[in-house]
Length: 607
Ligand code: ADP
Ligand code: MG
Image (cartoon, rainbow, N blue to C red; front, side):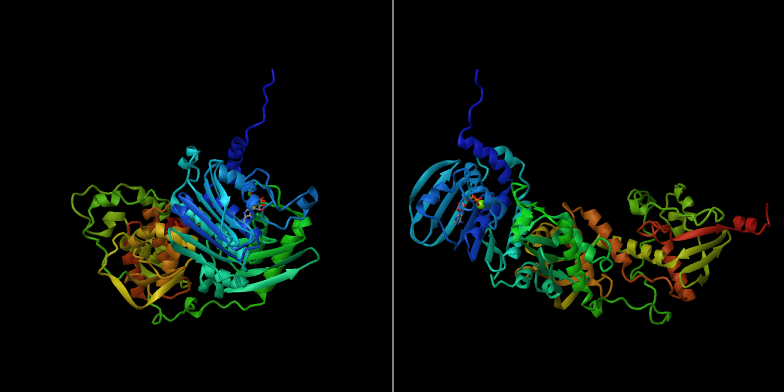
């Protein structure tokens, strides 16, 4: 008995839709790419609820005839290739002729189009034509997609939040705008404008529309070509970096592509210029004979096959390297760290501006200290086996079960009472008591003191302790970053950062907690925002923890800095007041103990 039959078109289209229509952003991609292929100079994308409710793409391109207006929804309907030969010289973004058929299978589509000679209006729902009639003669095309995924409800369930979907679409439109600087793009969400590019053809201007002027100002151009490839673009100077590689965009013949090796080539070119974990913002525009590329390896055409790949990646690396080497890299003077000085009058040690609540902390609170978080765990790095007993061992002893509140620090954390006797290499404090002597890493000690101070402050952001600014601080973020920032705004407010939206791609801050380390507010706020941008979900406790560590690292007394006797005493008192005085926030030891017994053993005074 024969069992095989040919699927009905509607069913086949629905199955194919799974590949093309992953999420609202993939529909926007298909519609905008069609508009680009139709030689439009102006493309408007409007979304309602991130496109889950409605997606509208309007262009001023060449439009379609009345017959094409219905034919475009058929499977394998395309005007872009006619034979196999064309497949190797593709210059358009689309060519498979399946996007519209797939989209129409899983949504309600309304189309208005005209090639200037004829016009048509078409309405299709779930693959069925509801309306097909002549329309107005305004040249261009307008696609309106509604009830996306309405007849495949399982998919809707797996949709991430509106914010996530919107983020994907903004990222996509940013890249399409970057790859087509001569087209003016507008993106609106729930009637608010998110992005507008001028279409002037100037790629730097598009970069500025997307990432803000501040970023664009820090970008330098590069350009290089060989017999097969032409590479050009812009990259940020090493002082303007991001925590993710996602800001490096690669374009191949006007198509945004994903290429791990291509991204890596840009990063390699900046090697030694960038701090670990930081990446540039860049756009790398590659032109090549289409014969060298195969775009037909992925339905969404993001990944492409490139012949002479190695050659291309070296060319990218060389182009960027030459550009970077051609400029002198002197970061803004304000950001420059003060040179290390030996004059103790000029640089005093940092002390917490308030008295620690030492006598009010009941003993049980000590038990609830976050000793389980990794940074609190002491990493015991003993210098060598001859050097005995690191002090952290005493930490494991149980806290005395006294009914009274802690009166002295020693009772809270067993921190010994020690007296400084001097300093080694301007780096380590030597201190002593009857149990032997101690070496204290002054830099690690100060980081610990600051960390605990900021941790407390970040947990109780108080409106009365605010520094008002005459001139607000200004921050620039791209629209997709803004979406994420909006989502995390309340978490940022909990750590004292109140952002106010100020036009596209810009936020201002008019006040911040007065206890932010002096002169560092901008970089602290930037780093806090980066922390939320990196995370998929923001955990307020983690944000506090990481912010406290970040703030504790700022401007601590560094090694090679001589301290006066009273500075050392103050440092040891503050250290003793810490909940965990034994390790710095990164887990390195703060002090090492040499017992009297071990000293005597080393000098053979005892056996
Ligand atoms: P493909 O882009 O692979 O050809 P699509 O299904 O995306 O397939 O589109 C089918 C055809 O519809 C295109 O080849 C083009 O002729 C026509 N078309 C789609 N969108 C537009 C538009 N915005 N302007 C003019 N023609 C369009
Ligand atoms: Mg297409």
